[in-house]
Image (cartoon, rainbow, N blue to C red; front, side):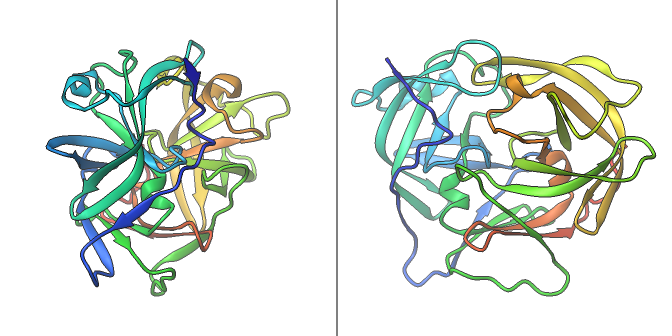
Length: 303
């Protein structure tokens, strides 16, 4: 069985849409604070596919085992899929070239990963998609109108109502930004964090030797979630501020986790999740290394 490192392998893609179309508009479900879309593979319609910036290659993962029998997997190969968590990697069948669609946007030449283990059985979502969206389009998330807009051009010029946040990338195509935290009443501490769009937490701070922050006085031991390699345990507590660009979120519930268990990204101080970002309309421009943000109707300090 092949051990398959999903977060560092890139494959070639071919995408197409209606002739002459300069953007695709796709219905977006963000009722849980994360971003979900519906995909179609042949005659199989799969709703509640989670958009994930950590899914850093062209393709689609289906982790709901209820879809295993309806997808044609006879030409696939078996693989192990490691990820966050302290247990063994998940098992899967992988197909190297599949076509699927999001609305009228066709994604061709894509890798399809279908989990054969019950790692995510019972989850409220059915799978993951990431780089197929972020890597080939300027991706705009309009949460006010529940739309994902894929701009097909190479550049975009948002008006002055948007704030530009620099993005950077390290050894893969996962986006990083610099943001500040205030744990209690100290001066803001600037942290290097990556974006995990699949996380419903506002912020996750990673515990490791030499970390730049201290934990709040009051924290609670909790089950934080489940990664591809099993359950993740840590703590939750409230921090005074999360500062992204010119915007401050106050009294933010934060998660704290062992960096060796929660994250495969070296030297990360923390993770910014959808619990913070969905309070803004967003434009991800990977090619320009920019994230544009604008407060939306959900913008208010999380308490």
